[in-house]
Length: 315
Image (cartoon, rainbow, N blue to C red):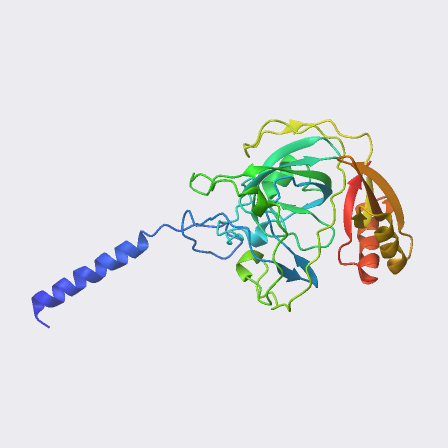
C-alpha cells in the first residue's frame, strides 16, 4: 500500500468510528442493561394466540372491552426493554401491559378504592401473575396510588386505538365482521413476539377453540371524556364498597352453569344478572375479604381444573 493509500485508509477508518459513536441509542436507567432499539419501532398489532402456565390467551379486537379486576405494576427490571409491539418500556411513561388487547390502544384505568382515574397506553403483554388484569407502568401506578400497596381494585375501559410511536396515525378501524370474530385456534406455533418480556415461551399443541366467557357487569363508574394519556388524574364516583369474587364462567343458559358447577363443586354457586336485556348465570365464589384471600381461592379453583377462573370486582 502506498503512503497516500495508507493515509486515505486511516482517514476512512476514523470517519467510520466517528459515525458509529454518533448513533442514537435509547439509554435505560443505570440499574438495567443497555438495550439498543430503533426509534419509531412500534407497530400496531393484535398478535397470535399464546400459552402461559397452561392457559391460552387469545388477542383480538375488543372495542367494547370493559372489565373489573386487580391491577399490578412492573418496574426497573423491564426498563429499556422492548415491549410486545416493538416500543421501549419507560417507567416514567403512562403505559400498561394487557394479555389480549391490541397494541397500542388507550384505556382508562380507574382505581375503585379511591376514584382516581387516568388514561394509559397499552403497548405490552402481561401480566402473567394469575388474578391480575393489567400491569401498570411505575408512573401510572404512582398517579393511581398503587405503588405502595402493589395492587388495586380497578376498572379498565377501552377508549380507542392510540397513535403509533413517533406521532403516526393509528390504522383505520377494523371491519366489524373481523373485530367481532373469535380468534383463530392456535396452530401449534407460538409467535414469541407477542409475549413481550416473557421470552422462550414453549411451543404449544393445537387446542379446541371455545367461546370466551361473558364479561361481568362492572360497577357504575362514570367514564371521563379525556381519551389521551396526558397524566391528568380524574376523580370518578365509585361504589361505597366493592367485593372480590372468583368467577369461573357466565352462561346464557342455566343448564350450562349447573353443568360447570357440578363439575367443580366446592363453595361455588350460581348467581343471575341482567346484562343488555339478557340474563347471565354466573358461576362464582365469594365475596372475599382481600386480594390475598382472592389469590388463595383462585389458586384452589384453578387447581380443581378451571383455567378460566379469574378475579372480578363487584358491588
